[in-house]
Image (cartoon, rainbow, N blue to C red; front, top):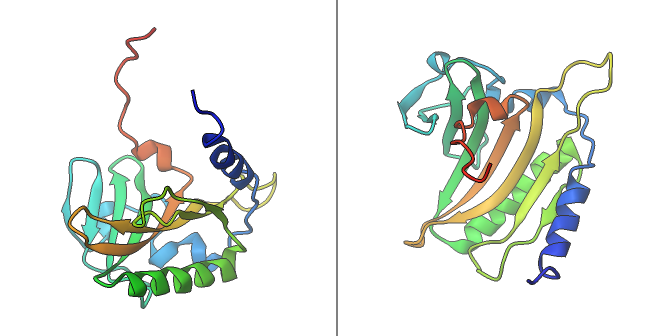
Length: 181
């Protein structure tokens, strides 16, 4: 059993869970979409079986991102939104990642970096995690933000910026019964 390789990752994950974010109004509704917003109110092209919807447009697009998708259910509304910057050249993806990281960091502070594996397509994940609002403070809707590079097996690349809301577990599919119980 090789525990040493996973310990730095677990330590980074544990540290990231302690980061407290003061969520500014600009990111309380990323790209102009609110937690729990109805899918019917969005300009979406199609839905998939996994509760994801490709959007034709968003109210407040980011200039580097050209595609958007949400995860939503009829009961919970929007739980997650992702912006994509598909690009052919790795250098352009790296530049987009750097600019997006700086833009989000300006509002949320410095992220935790979770290193990727040795695969050059996996650059790691920049992660901003919010803690619940203190008693009496306005409710926070943003749970976490993450930024990473994605690469398909066919070589297509994209910079991806994802925001998950506090209701994100409401959009997860139900787990099958545990056969080990």
